Length: 254
Image (cartoon, rainbow, N blue to C red; front, side, top):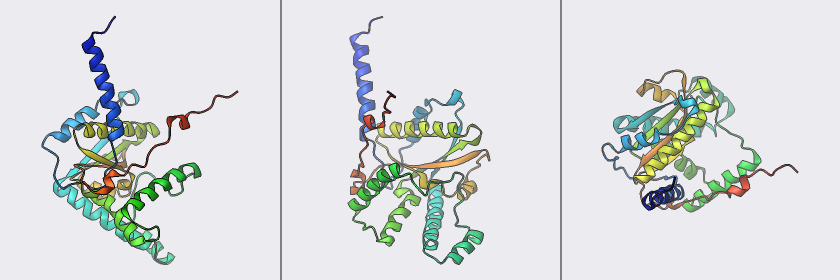
């Protein structure tokens, strides 16, 4: 069966749009306070729900925070982080006491990596050095580094935050499907002029979310996503680059 010129043109336009979206998407780290236009988030999520999943189980749930809920969560999460960052430099006995009594201690569902494999650590460090270098934050300036890290927990000023939960029953496959959904949301947002930043840091505290959302116990907090209109701050121009797809290809055995 042949294709008409109109069908071929449409196919090329779709390919060009996807290619452009993948290349222009950035992790924005400074947002305008302007809320998303009414109904815009629904359109983004409707598109993203076309994502494939394991046997079409769609093993995820979303908690969308905006308005007063967003503000309350930002205040509590940021406060928790600042408290923990102080404890990291405190004597061991105080850290132990805090572990037993402090409500600010992390309540994450998934263990977050503290030690990175050497191969991956090199990429992580290169990304961090580039970002902090752009912001003029020196390596040993712990105060400014803490301030920048704390911005994660106020969603970099974004008016909307989405928290992603994976059903524990499918193990890593639920996590895989959340990743697919997350990418779809970011691309659907980018297509509508909405910027985003995926954040593992937003999974450090589950308890505050339980106060504001009715989350089934079988769903585990995996990550968060800040959504909004990017500001013109220089941080939003940062792109750490990517390795070549050829570097990912495994050599055939001879």
